Length: 136
Image (cartoon, rainbow, N blue to C red; front, side):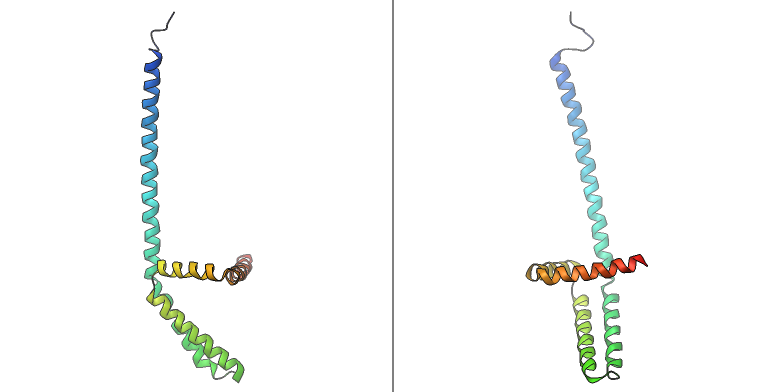
C-alpha cells in the first residue's frame, strides 16, 4: 500500500533538490555579500592608513630634526651615529610620504624574501618588546 500523502519518490527527490538549490543560492548570496562588506572594510582601513601617512612622515621628520639638533652635544663617536640615525629617519619620512600602503607592503614582502634571517630576528625583537609593553 502506497501512502498518497507523500507523493511519488521522484517528486520527493525533485522537491528536496529544489529546496537544497534554494538554500545553496541563499548561502552563496550571503557569502558574496559578506565578502563585499569585508572588501569595503579593508579598503576603508587602507584609505585611513594612507590618510595618516603625512602625519607619520611629519613625526619622523620632527624626530630626525630633534636628533640632529642634540647630536652635537654628544661625544664624537656617538655624535656620528646620532646624525646617521637622524638621516635614516629623514629618508624614512620621505619613503612614507612618497609610497602608498600597498607599495610599502610589497617592498616589505620583497625585503623578507631577500633577507629572511634578518626579518625573523627583527620580528622576534619587536615581539619581545611588544610583549614586555603589554605586560605592564
